[in-house]
Length: 238
Image (cartoon, rainbow, N blue to C red):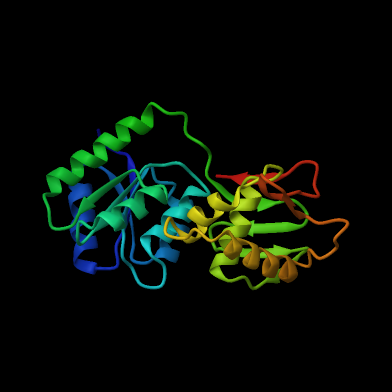
C-alpha cells in the first residue's frame, strides 16, 4: 500500500517532522499542519485519504478539528495522544475518530494502524468533501469556519458555528438536542437547556426572530430543524 495522501497534524515540530519522514519513506504522499485552522485548510486543498491528528493542541483541539472534518468527509482519522487516557480516548472516538495511538510507541505500529484504516476505507463508498453550504440565506464556509447571512458576515462563537454546521448539514431533518449536546459540547454534557439557550442566542444573531416564519424551528419530541428557504440546497464538493 503506497501513494495514498495522508495529512499529519501535530503542534510539536520534532514529532511532526518524524512522522512526515516516516510516512514519506513508506511511500505515502504527505501534507503537514501544526495547528487546527491550518489543518482544515490543508484538508480541503490536499484532500487526504487519511488524517493523523494530534489530540492536544492549543487554540483548537484535535477533537474540534475532527468534528469539523466530519462535517465535510468520512475519511479515516487516527488520533495521536501523549498519554493513554480512557476518557480522552472515548471523547476522540465519539467525535468521529477511527483509531487511537499513544505517542512514543513504535512507528511500525502506527504504520500498521494507518494501513489497516486505509484498507477498510477502500471498501466503503467515499463521500465527497463538502467545503461550503449555500442556500440563499446561509453561506457556510467549512474550510474557514466563516458564516454569512443574506450576504453579510456574522460573527459567531465556536459553539454557535458548530450548531449552524450541524443544522445545515441536516437541513430539513430534525436534530435531537441530545445529539447536538454530544456533537457540539461532548459526551459529558447532559443538560438540554444548554442547547435551548444557545439556540435562542443564535436565532437572534442571524435575525431569525419572526415567530410565524422561523427558519430554525423546534419540532417537539424530535429536535431542531433548519428549514432552508431554497428549494435546491447547494453543497459545493471538491
